[in-house]
Length: 203
Image 1 (tube, rainbow, N blue to C red):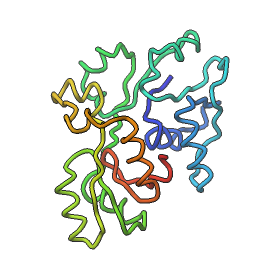
Image 2: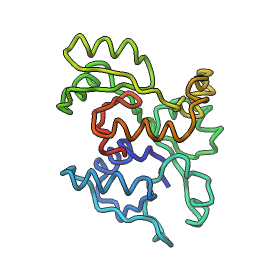
Image 3: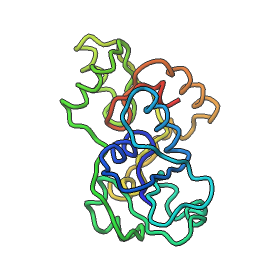
């Protein structure tokens, strides 16, 4: 069972795999994968986990599924995690993982700007990170830019390593208000966690 974030990293990994046999996915991975495949991305055939999985098959699931009752139902499996944090042995050991693949989600500055331009969006909303600085930069490049507040405060490992804490303004926002905020920006491009993606994919 390979833990990888459901939108972006999971598909990046699957697209790079040789023909190794059947690939099964958690629902949180299969949904975005089907959408991206429908938009023309070349991705290998996948099967959503609905019951028993053949021995030797690869299962791709979000990190939150590792060690969960969902994963336990798969029987005797080996778990691994693909993340930039796997470069730190202590984190891999604390998670009890036998294998860690170092693969980061984050784009560098040129890559992030290229990704935004590739969306073709005129309005760009940024979230998570140095949003004020990045918004000002985008405005100088001719974009109509804004900021979307997020409750996301990083991975558990990131919080442990860097002392990250959820902003009080985010923690106090009612869940219904957060949901409305997400729907409000459903048709514009948004930079999320260091990469720019069309939010129509993430709805």
